[in-house]
Length: 88
Image 1 (tube, rainbow, N blue to C red):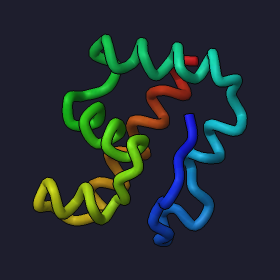
Image 2 (image 1 turned 180 degrees about the vertical axis):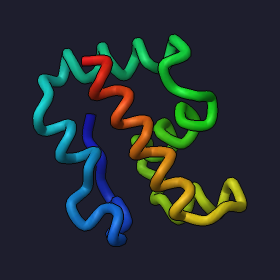
Image 3 (image 1 turned 90 degrees about the horizontal axis):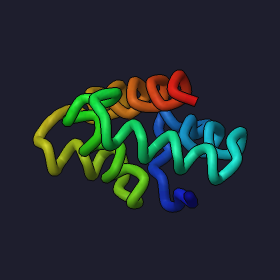
C-alpha cells in the first residue's frame, strides 16, 4: 500500500499510517486490513474514513465530505490504525 499526497497537520507531521506501513510486511498488512474491513473490528465510520484516507484523500477533504471537523477525522483514523495494529 502506498499513500501519497497526505496533508501535513500536527496530526500527521510524522504520518502514523506511513510509519505503520513501513513496519509491516505488505502481505501481513494487507491481510490485516482486509480482515478488519470484513469483520466488525472497525466501526462503519472508521472503515469509510480509513478507506478514503488510504485512497489518497486528505484529512481535511474527508472532513469536508462528511461536514465535520478535521480533528474528528484524525481521531477516527488513529483509532482504526490502533485496531488494525492490535489485529496483527
